[in-house]
Image 1 (cartoon, rainbow, N blue to C red):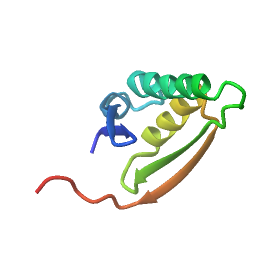
Image 2 (tube, one colour):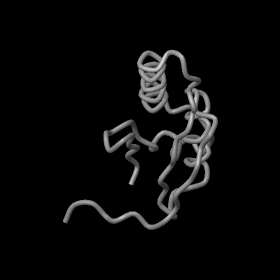
Image 3 (tube, helix red, strand yellow):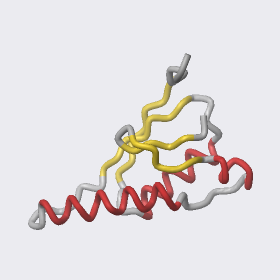
Image 4 (cartoon, rainbow, N blue to C red):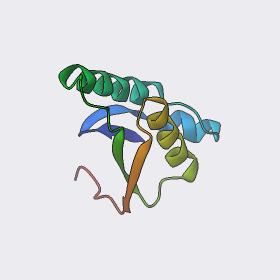
Length: 93
């Protein structure tokens, strides 16, 4: 499964990371997370942005993909990243 989702909405693909075999920023994911951070700051201008996100990762996802998603989240202003790892249910069927 190559699809990335943010709050259940498609946020890009990991295909390029897997094909290149090296860490890289995932542009679509970065844009969505950055926009969410900016919206939060507009709605709550007097509070510091917590920068928290939780990555739900299938156990079969290559480490290079996980590192790229983690790094992209940090670039977008989310330095506090937690992980949920497990076997994700297969979609479709």
